[in-house]
Length: 317
Image 1 (cartoon, helix red, strand yellow):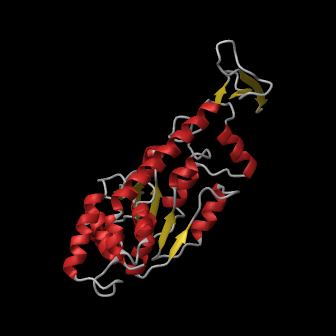
Image 2: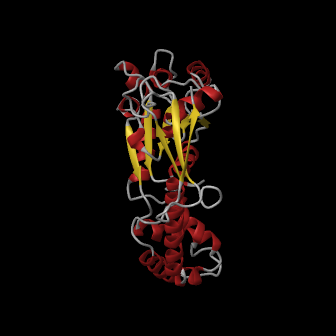
């Protein structure tokens, strides 16, 4: 994917490209100062904002291969991760996608670390799931594989996350993640730039002049609310209208309204689902109490019209 197709805030692409190129030609500089020849980049922010797309474009720009390691794979352990990391060659991009997802599976050093299973010695759903699929990866194992004694050098480490607040500080500190880039929902400046990428004046269909393209792009950006729509949603809308630039702009405001209605509907459905099933962990840690609303049927309704609750316990030890 060409780097020109990635539309980020001014200066971000240039900063990353220059930083990567400077690192790749600085091996002697690192060696003379006794600094491990490694560089880490943490791309964090909302889903669909272009984090992975940027990495693919950087790989093409730098002429590097991408090696992807999934920390949430079934059966992932410290030894497995070390073995995988040992096979990664120098001068490549090592990609850890959705880094926060691994932390929901019990990747932690202790009970106080971010993402650690709560409740002391009691087993939780995350711990039970980890045991069932054989995943025993620990945060200390992950850290050692990234910059331990046996860790490889000469590679660019890229990690992506939608929830930076879930990461343990030891993982995101300088030396492991040296450069942080925040990805947000599309700004008006990005919306205008993305429109121009979809409808270049040289081979757009229908053929449009530079002046008309600029005018349409400005109108499209005006119709898109600042920081509300993801880059992915904008691209999806433009893709459906790739041969209708004028109609695309004229219908943009209506599309925004529909997107808002869809988001509101999904949010409401999620809230209703959460209300129907509430999970509580008993102090003893031996049982979980599941409370579920029973609609009609044998459950019936209470005297005041409220739904009766059906409660039952499920052993988790």
